[in-house]
Length: 208
Image (cartoon, rainbow, N blue to C red):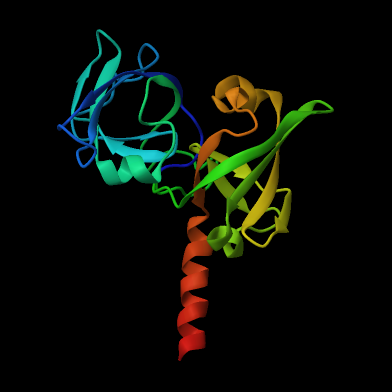
């Protein structure tokens, strides 16, 4: 489990093929801030742009770790198939503060940035989510964008998508990679865990 509070800004520095064609996954080498890996062990979970991955090797001296990502995970996520900057969060410990919301690290869909511009002291971010995620998006509800726990300010349903709006304060832009987004960027989305269970329970009740 995670909280959606980013604990490190890293970068994918190498992408190595695990096979000869697209049916195989990739091995990623991720560089972290100094000290980020000091309490990490083999097999630990680290969310990379919101996608939970398993540490397969690591070096505290070089501040790097590796992970294997399957072809299916590459197909269902954005920003993990090439070198570039990423948001990092280590898995939640039982005694940690829950500063964001409960996040599983499972990407539910890919969104597309439609608008990103300053509004007053903050920035407005508008994202088009897949239509099937619309029922999980609500005013003042939670959503995870590239691993960052955020609050939905507006929701607008469309025929083939659902547009939601978020306000980003300067602190969020300084401590995550969201400030590098632009119109057309694809982002990883995870819906609120509680909303997922509520929808399932209500659906089961209706079917009965």
